[in-house]
Length: 87
Image (cartoon, rainbow, N blue to C red; front, side, top):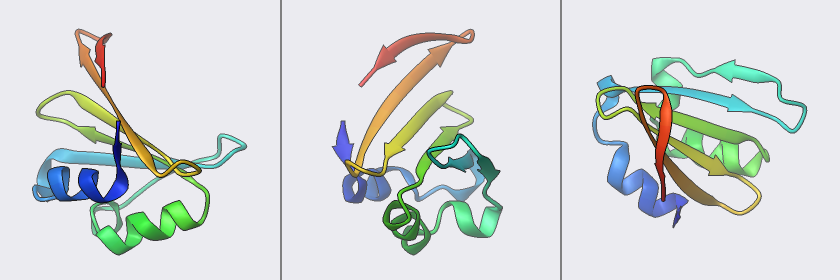
């Protein structure tokens, strides 16, 4: 696990390989558009709003879940739709 700043620094440089969703405590989901999803101030705003954020690195088949109440990131790596590693 890492904090939000480290995650943003490490993963937000390539805008074209990510999908992103946010959801609240009621599991209401919203897909973020390309302008929103990889913008660092937007990520900070989501954290401040107590929302959870899931970012998918399409090329590397990795999912990053940001737990807003803790401001940490967990990386989940999938292979053939199975979880093979949680960092």
